[in-house]
Structure formats: C-alpha cells, structure tokens
Image (tube, rainbow, N blue to C red; front, side, top):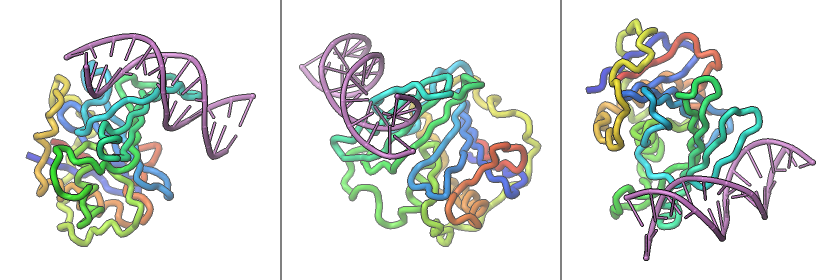
Length: 225
DNA sequence: CCGATTTGACCTAT
DNA sequence: ATAGGTCAAATCGG
C-alpha cells in the first residue's frame, strides 16, 4: 500500500509526500520552532485550494500580506469552543504557481474527532503520536525537543532510490481526491516506517525535524503512495 | 434555524 | 505608523 522511495538523503532535507493527487512538500521551521509546521500543498488538476487535511477548520479571517500576491486565510479548529482545541492554520497561495498553497499549522489538535472518551490527545508518546497524527493529516510537526524519541521506532527502511526526478507528482491520480480519501492512508504500521525514516533522516538536528534548503535541489526523500 | 464565511474594524508587536 | 493577526456583525448556504 505504501510505496516509499528515498532519494539521496544528504544534508539538505526536504520531504515530499505525494498523496493521490495532492503533493505535500514539507518544509522546515526555525530553531525556536514550537508546534508549527509549514507544508506546501499542490492541488493537482484545477482544484481550488488545499484539500481536506483531516480536520475541520473554520475560517476566521483573511489578510492581504505585504509583498504577497494573494491574501492569507486564517483558520482555526472548528472545535475551539467545544473542546478548546488550539489548532490553527494559515493558507496562502504561492505567488508563482497558483496551484501551490503554503499551509502553516500552529498548535496541536486536542479535539477528539469523534467524541471519544479518552483524555485530550494522549499522554503516552506525545511525540510519536502527534507525529503520526500529523502525518496522517498530511502535515508534519516541528520537533521542539530533540527528544523526538526515535527510540521506539523501528529502523528506517530506506527504499532503494528511484529515478523520480520525473513524475513531479500528478501522475497518480488525475482528479482531485474527494474528502474522506484520508481514510485510506497507510495504517499505523506503515506510518511508523515513514516516521522512522523521516526522523532518521533528520535526527542529527535537535531543533528541527526537517531543515530545508530553500534551493531544494537534491537530496529529497520522496514518499509515494 | 443554525453553523460557516465574509469583511472591515480592532488589537498588538515591531 | 505599519503589518500581521483576530474579532464580530452581517451575510450566506444547507
């Protein structure tokens, strides 16, 4: 189900996830990063905005940004009131490519997707869990503690390199993915692998899960699904 | 009717 | 004063 390939993992780390017709390029954040993460999302086909990332958001504002061609939209978790979920995100269309959106996530979701009973988020492996959750949602989280316990994860299974420089990523699915497609994301086991691979790649850096080279030329791990 | 979006005003840090 | 972020009333849509 999950077919992953990693290419030239070097000092430049930039993860690119291809999910159906959505492409996720995970960028990095600053050293002081807390729970924020940048994700560049491209909507394949003529989709209008980033797809559903697994959470329900409510837009609460929009601003024109200096120097940016397109306005930035502000969203917060729909369950902010009901469950005091602090998660928010900002979405801004990239200047050059109108099909690209930069999405910045802030905070972790503490809301329960389906009114469950266990305590807000989990206390067990905040790191692993949130990472998984985030990956599942199509984003990534900046590690704010170097402690990103890669301890509990299995050894990375770096697949053999694939000459990918090519299908930049729209080939898989010609049409936009309907909401709900996320239900078909890899199972935890697979995600674990992804996570471990990613953490392994960037483990050396304590502040950032992913550091990225603005000129993301080479050494880009790719994960295809 | 109710919840989400729109939009200008308001707030705050630089 | 300016820019970025948020509030909230009006509006929209199911």
